[in-house]
Image (tube, rainbow, N blue to C red; front, side, top):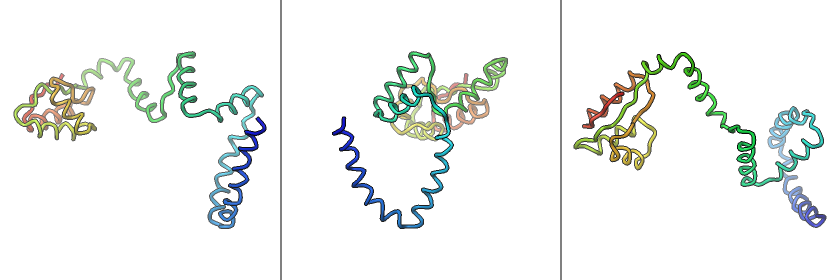
Length: 175
């Protein structure tokens, strides 16, 4: 363990002289000074000895180990770690979940491509413009007809998508 600590300390000692010229530059120090106060509120959290040990262990883990830990925690406690960006989308969908299910069915529609007709390339272009699919994914969707192009969209958007696809030569159904 002592040899490992010495190895860890030696690179730090070598890095320090490399950082000294940067410290002489005034603009480089100012952002560091601004970043330091942002870290102070995090340091104010009082953790028990066990929690500190766990935090230190997590800091030393590799990304693969952290991924495995997250999966194990999800399995153990029956929770899902979702990205913050996904939370608003989930919240929007759950707000319609109660009594709004019946009105939601009336207001939304699914656009299904029945066949691509004679002009497959034009239909692929329209599918790409309607969705965020890449060329290969759009081609696979078109060739795999019947397949859903858009699901759970407002009826006006579904009608517009149907119109665009039919103009390209596709046979489309709205349900």
